[in-house]
Image (cartoon, rainbow, N blue to C red; front, side):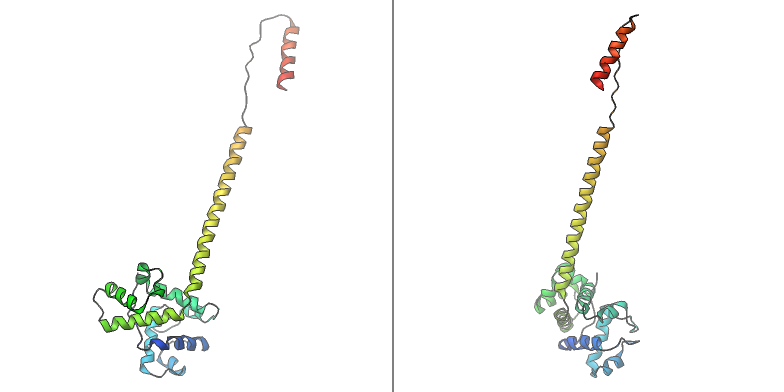
Length: 209
């Protein structure tokens, strides 16, 4: 379970921050100078670094993690961010699986409960605003489709396994039936006439094959 402590006072700049990251080469360290080089020179712009840490994009020392490099692929960047948000705000998503659709007021009210009085009203509003801005930039629709496709795949695989098990049981049952053996005990009459025995065995051959 997880709740973030980081936020930005410039939530409307979140798309610009991520677009700047996408347009730049991955640095050795994501630090203040990196964002200054991207033309984000305000001290308020530095707050995005704490957010990137809690999203799992960079280590505490600013070193890019695998998620950062995955994000650089524009074909999946917003999906990567959506998964990072679900992880960073997992406490909120445990309450509402579609928390990314919630309004600012609803998010703030949920945070009041989740933070249990440890955050002031102003901070709660800033964290909620940051969450909303992140969700607006991310792509949760594709994530939901992938999850649905994965669930369908699991169901289909289970059906296939069940079908195979049924067929295996049918084959086993058939094999058991085919392997049945019959033992017939014949009590022969006492006779010294060989013709009597010859007639009995001939009759057995004719009727039993």
